[in-house]
Image 1 (tube, rainbow, N blue to C red):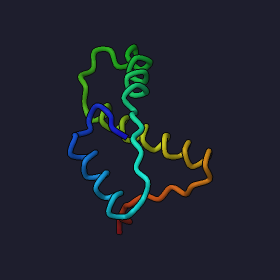
Image 2: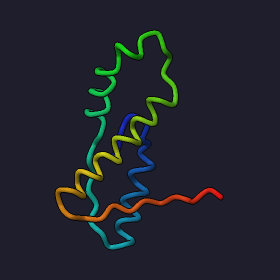
Image 3: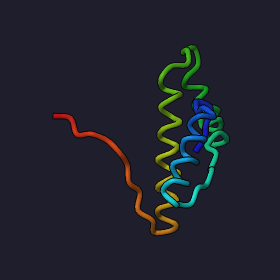
Image 4: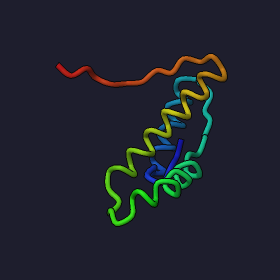
Length: 85
C-alpha cells in the first residue's frame, strides 16, 4: 500500500516476500486518500509544520484499507508486534 512516505524498496521487498511465500501480491495505493485527508485537515493544521503526524496518517490508512478488505472478503488481518513488558 504505497503512500507518500513509501520507498520503492518497500514495494520491491513486499513483492519478493509474496513470491517466496507463494501468495498473491496486490498493490493498492493510499496516496489519493492520504492527500484527501490532508485537504480535510488543512484548516486544523494551519500554522503547524509537517511532522510525524503526516507519516502516522499513512500508517492508519493502511489499517483502514486492510480492515475494509477483510470485511469485504472475510479474510483475516494479521499484524506483527511485540508486547511491552
